[in-house]
Length: 315
Image (cartoon, rainbow, N blue to C red; front, side, top):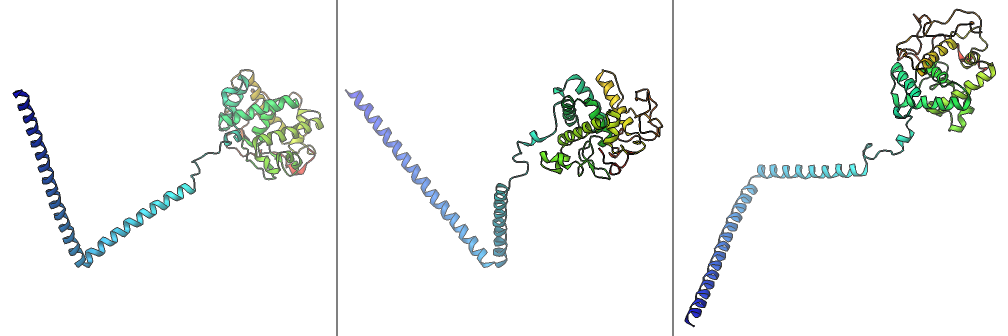
């Protein structure tokens, strides 16, 4: 019985000692804190008196405080403006990719891909939009019974694949259609400004070409009508050059190699409006030495030697 009682007394004494220690420690910390706060308060009070007594120091501090407040206000205003006026690139127009005249070249068949790649390199234009135009030419050619290579050859000679090209007489777009003459054909597309939409211009141009060929009775005659030379002695070699460019494209379709720098052949000399028999251009025809309209990248979309389309509007 003695041992347990002794152990309880020891425990009690220990607990009391711990409580006393903690109480003393807390009182000591509290006293130190009070003293520290008193010291800090005295220091602040002293600085305040010093600053209050010196106008230059007080003015400097007020100026810096004001600058800091102004900077914070400007930063907040700028942030609010950015939230109210989104960046032009913050949220894109999701329909833009649908409006773009472009296609992945891998979606083209072998013949179309060969033509698109060659035209892209020859006229220094991106393969995606050219691929889309090649694809459309194939579709339109099948619908109206024209060779797609003929359509693309006209685009090459007329505008060098520049959808915003305009001639001195007002022929516009890829196929250089005289918009003011064929404005009725753009009604279905929303008006004359559609002439600068590549696919619309291509469709209108192909319709005009089809009508010209039907009226003339032949491709060569239709090309002379298309360029406005139906009532002239000759077309300045226009039909010959279009057919020469088409021949390049036909060779590509057959799997043959054609240099992208191939120059258009020289049109045969003729005073007649009819083509010279046997004059169908081939790759072996002598190259043009001085007149390379549109065949070179960056060439003027208005073909040198073209008749003035205003002079003959029978097409």
